[in-house]
Amino acid sequence: MLLLADMDVVNQLVAGGQFRVVKEPLGFVKVLQWAAPSVL
Image (tube, rainbow, N blue to C red; front, side, top):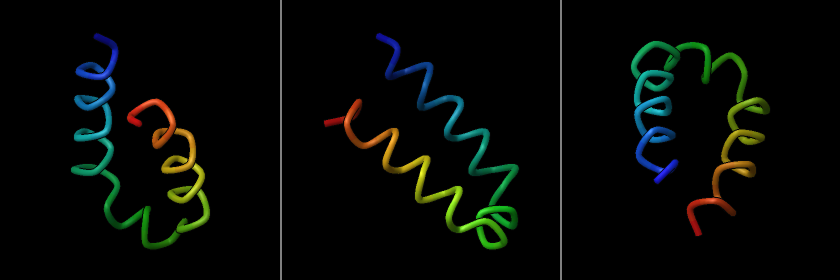
């Protein structure tokens, strides 16, 4: 299951990039758009 590995990566990105997400909302939206289809 690649989903489990992806979640580990996402957790690391969230833990280390919360402030970056605030500064780069468009990039965060692109990540959501990329991740949503694979999750659904």
